[in-house]
Length: 250
Image (cartoon, rainbow, N blue to C red; front, side):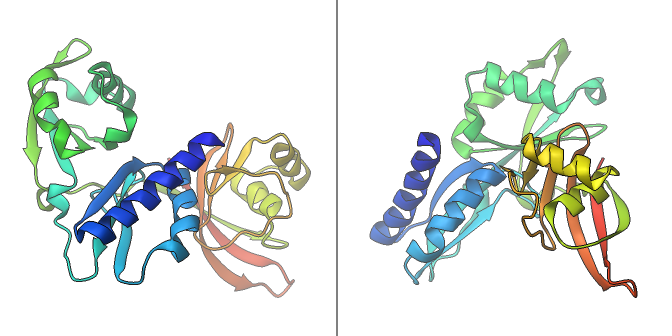
């Protein structure tokens, strides 16, 4: 797809600029699929003296930036990612969609916004530093709720881990249809039909092959059932089945 080629080109350009200018360069915020596309291309294309990583402000961030740096230069993450703390009366009534809609309503492109983490008394929003002044001056309301915006350093914030419900299961093999069946609690045949109908994503890409292998750490998105992670492969049972733990995000 043309968009895929463009994002890969931008990543390679960031690597090349980093090498030529001996300075830290970044790209993003990127969603998981974009990161996967980029990683495939730059894993072997990046020079050995250029270090690169994906970082979104905290360990479990879903939207992350590609950060490239010469091996002798340390990245100052607070210069690359800014955290906004949004507070206000009845802020607990606002959802992720409310915060994102208000930010994009200011004309801010999605690529300039990282994770949005609503909490009972505040919301943290990760953005590019260039957006700080504009958002601070213009984001005064979200819906009917007046809000205040305060800048925070990455070291000041704590983001709770996303809640999961662990599912213990055994599967006949580490195939995609078996994993989907165990995660969603449906028959293997129905899981295969869902894959065939392109209702399943494996690591954020639409899956088309029921027999595709799955491994520890793989992400599953099953339409109508939610998002899952194959968090642990525990070994083989006496009956020759594979014991697994699948985390469902709730």
